[in-house]
Length: 84
Image (tube, rainbow, N blue to C red; front, side, top):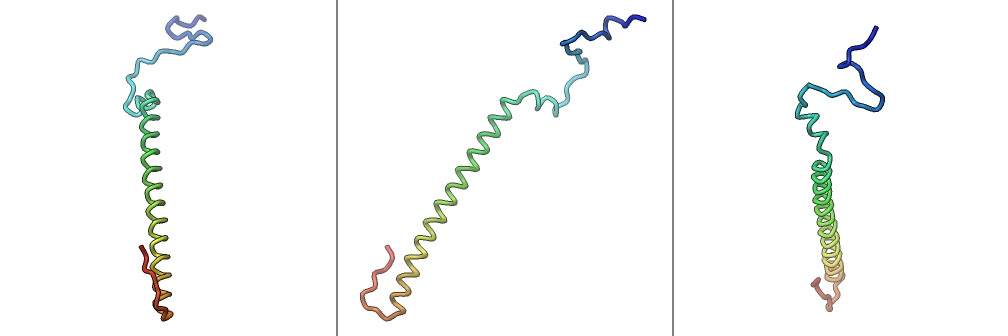
């Protein structure tokens, strides 16, 4: 029994699909655009994280300076230098 020519698939060839692609599958067909979008999103998240780290380090430095000044004043010393 012979197979019809339309149903035969030769080795190394892909059968052609007549079904239209859904939007979900179309998104997988465009990996370059998704990769670029994912990369820019990751860079934005990294920038926000670095800004938060820098702001928190500045805040810790200011709180230490104020604590040192407060300790000096509460100990009764006269020559306390306030935080700058």
